[in-house]
Length: 230
Image (cartoon, rainbow, N blue to C red):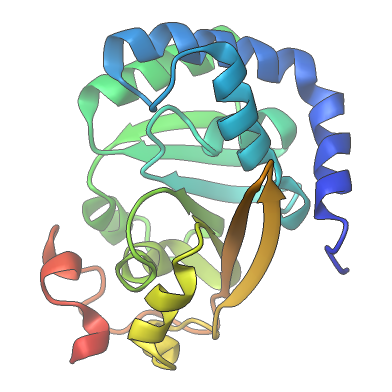
């Protein structure tokens, strides 16, 4: 299926789930005052810059299976995914305790039985949940090369990894070159979309094989010693 009409497909999904998404925005705005879950706190900005952005991913995601949102922060995009994909089991992973506590409360108020919050470093959690997820996603986490190492261990073979990226994504990909197969990943696909006047991209990998022995590494190693510079 082609996704040239990504915007129209996303709008359809937003319309179907808007009441619950609006309630999430209200809860996120209140929680943001206490735990700094995301940048802005006013509801209209949260809706326009965060909910609409996350919703653009929906046409690219499965209806069922298991998904994990790595570095979920205030639940973006994981809670949007859980609201709009009720048959998808969504894990919301973050390493900051105060954020996890607020996200867990938000999920409880929203009645999201298909979402669970986990407070752990991604490297540690991946070691115990190696290749268990059909969909792995991350938004505003780190550069593509480092991010690929953090996300690849979670994905099942033939699973999908989707990262939200800005205009510098081409530079990030150039740094790695064509070495993605070393992580058991396909070459990445860039899917552009517009968020208002901003040009954004989805960076999408397919998991083509198992991650190599030694991945995931200890926390912090991916940033200090990039795998693609070996």
